Structure formats: structure tokens, C-alpha cells
Image (cartoon, rainbow, N blue to C red):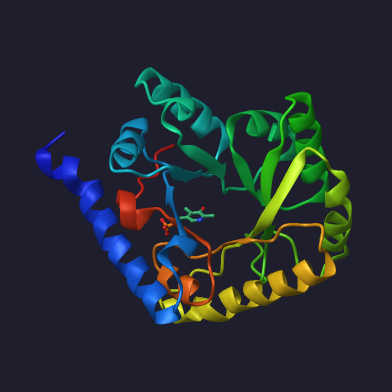
Length: 246
Ligand SMILES: *Cc1c(COP(=O)(O)O)cnc(C)c1O
């Protein structure tokens, strides 16, 4: 690894940190109200190591199998998450037949999008004698290709009713991915909508925790922070472009 590559992550992190701080100032929010998640999907264990050495402790991955391999590779590098205190969240769609593996590997499943999946995760976590943290993924657009719960669906209503009795799940909040648009302002109405939904849900379901609002990616995280994001998920702007083999 060249010196330049070696310092690449730190340089990009410093730039992102500056932009996060600026967005927090504009919004009158404290920097400590916003968590930065490094989205390491499609990047190597070496890249994650680089990020950990730069101080990152929260990561997002989108596939169970990819992270199973990466997690083993990190352990080989002496960087098991238990050893360094790093947390890894699943942010990609999870098929319910992989729920058990995901419950074992991840500190949180941020992409829960069906009652069936919530139940499977609850059973898996119970079997592991632990609690799994979850976020509900909300789909605010009508794109066919996107996953997530329709905010007005009976399924979401049912999940919210059932969650207090799914004792091995610890609900923490909501996540959304707005439609891709080059203009970050295009995402603002979606971010605002998620914030409003959270307010509504929290009022209707006082037993549940909705404190985490995970929204905003490389192109639009500043807007998301202005609209109340408590977690921003940043991949490309931290790690560089992903290459898509296979
Ligand atoms: C890939 C991904 C991100 C990060 O996207 P970038 O544009 O690379 O920052 C964030 N959230 C989810 C759900 C993703 O799949």
C-alpha cells in the first residue's frame, strides 16, 4: 500500500467530519447527536482495518455472506469486533432464511422490513440468548426495486403492535433510503417525512424506542442532518468508489 493510499481514508474522514460539523451548526444540533456509520460493503477487510485505525467504530454492511468472510478476515488481522469494540450493522435486505446467521454476526439489523423477518430474528436472538437491536426500514417512494415497509401498510401497523412482545428484539428506530437523485435537495422531503413518521409512531407506541433516525448517504448526508438524522451511512465518500465484481 502506498503512503497516499494509506492516508486516503484519514483525509476523506477529515473532510466528511468537517461537513458533518458544518451541517450540525446550520441545524443548531450538537455533533454528538449524529453518528457516522462507515459503509464498508464491497470493500476489503484491509479497508475496514484502515478505517478502524483511523478511529471508526461503526460500520454498515449489506450482505450476510460477504460480512461472514470479512469478519473472519478481520479476526485473522487481530481485529475481531470484540477485540476492538467495532460494531457492524446490516443495512441491506435480509431474507428471513438468513435471519439466524445475521442475528449471530451483526450487532444490529437496520433493514427489518417484514413481520416474518422480525419474528425469525426474535427466535434466532432468543436461541443465542441475546437481544438483537433492530431498525425498521421504511420505504417512502414507490420504486419497484426498493425494499422497506410502506408507512401506511397494515403490516407495519402489525409489526409495531407486536414488537413489545418480541422480547429478544430491541427496537431502536427507523431507516430509509430515498430514491437516488444527483441533487441532494431532492431527498429533503423524504428525510422530513421520516422524521414526521417517527414523531407519530413514538406518540402512538410509547413502549418502543424510536430514537435512531438513520438517513443520509454520501450525496445527501448534510441535508439529512439538517432534517434530524441521528445516523448517516457513508460509503463512497469515505472508502472511494466500490468496484462490482461477480
Ligand atoms: C451502499 C449504501 C449506503 C452508502 O452509500 P454511499 O452512496 O456509497 O455513501 C448507505 N445506505 C445503504 C442502505 C446502502 O446500501
